Length: 111
Length: 138
Image (cartoon, rainbow over all chains, first blue to last red; front, side, top):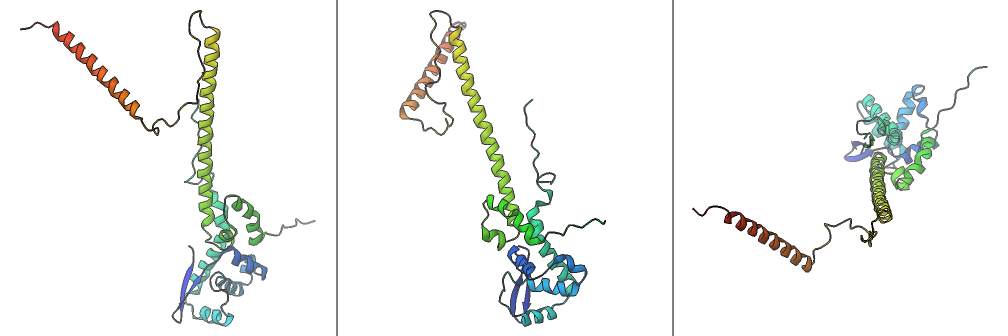
C-alpha cells in the first residue's frame, strides 16, 4: 500500500490517494496539468487531497498546521505526486502483458 | 489554420473508461474506487491465470474429442474392411475413465490383482525349475 504516515501532536495521519479521492479533487477543480503553472497552490491541494481517503472530515486549519509543520517539503511533494499518478498508472499495466519480464510468450508446440 | 490541440483527459475520465473492464474481472465498486490502488495489478494477473487455465481445458477437450473421433473412425473402417467370421468391432460402450487413479480399488479388484501376481510368480518358478532341470546334477 502506497501511503505516507505523518505524526502530528502524537496523532498519526495516513496520507493516501484512492481513485475516489482523485475524482473528488478533480470535481473540485484540481487539474494536475496546471502543476507547472501554479506549483505552490497545487502541491498544497495535493497534500490536502491526500487526507480524503482516511481523514475526510479533518478541518482545513489543522491540515494547514500539519503542512506548515512538515519538513523536507520537496521530498513530500515528490512522493505525493508519485502517489497521485500511481492511481492511474496502476490501471494501465506498464506493458506487462506484452513485453514485460513477467509475460509468458505463447509458443504453440505443434509442428 | 493552426492545429487544435485535443484537451487531455482527466484522471476521472480515464478511470471511468477502464472501470467496466475491471468490473468484468470481478473487481467490486469499492475495491476500484476506494480500495488499495495496487489491486488492479493482481486482478490482471489472476485474469491471465484464468485465461491460461481455460486454454489448457480447451486443449484437453479438443484432444479428448479427437480420441473419441479416432475410436469411432477406427470402428467404422475396421467393420467395413472386416473379414468374414471375425468379430465385429464395437464402439466404446461407456466414456473413457479419465481419473483412473482416483477410483478406489474394490476388494474384488485387489483379489484379482493378487491372483494375477501369484500366477505370475508360479509361472516364473516353473520356468526356473525347468531351467535348472537341464543343468547337470554335479
